Length: 344
Image (cartoon, rainbow, N blue to C red):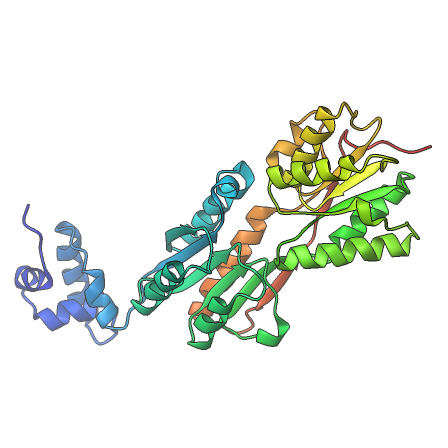
């Protein structure tokens, strides 16, 4: 079937091409009966105006860019891959499409130029970023040019602007974990932090320390480990911790659930029983936490709420809606399972 253009639609409807354009673009200066007649012809012939023409007319694309900065192991993780679903569903609920790019980093010049080009070519109305550091120069550059950006796990009060939207974890989760561990009677506490420069990594590290100081817990350097946010990094960190041997902690508090899963593997290799010899806590609420043996105690977040909020507020920024919060912090919920024991 021949692809119709606006000229053909105008001929079939018996109106001028400019009238078709005004109807398609929603202008008010078209009589209702004319609008209805033109729309009837458009629907009957399944005509969709070219996006390029609408962009030239200053219309929005109805598309959000989703830029996920991640390596392959994290991108393939069940929990992390659900982020794409939540963003896509959140956008669809507002009538938006998603253009997805998974990039290993934002330090490579090709990756930086790729992201910039998508914004400069006006392919998207706004960009959603996941996995960026808290001092990412590209975000500063994009925001300074007036682009609308939504960012997961990013908070810079010095960069506060209506076109820079963020969603964040609460900042005191680490302290809550230590409160919980101490409530079970643990005093020999090891912590596996993330060495990454994500906002949550920095605040959790500070919060773990604050909680230990609050309860007068001895902070032993060999029990304060650094990892990434992957299971593999948790395994390596725990192996290093155990390599010191000597006295062992009674509980290991991991900066996220994936890291905790790595701790499980390392302890099993060493023949250490969970939780009889060492208890484990996580943070996030990973779907695997309830099926691993023993099930993992975790401070869980609702990631669907995270991304629906971020997408909704980013779209509100596109529309320049008033009273649109630039930042939100969501709270965790303790989910107790079998990975922790009480010290009598």
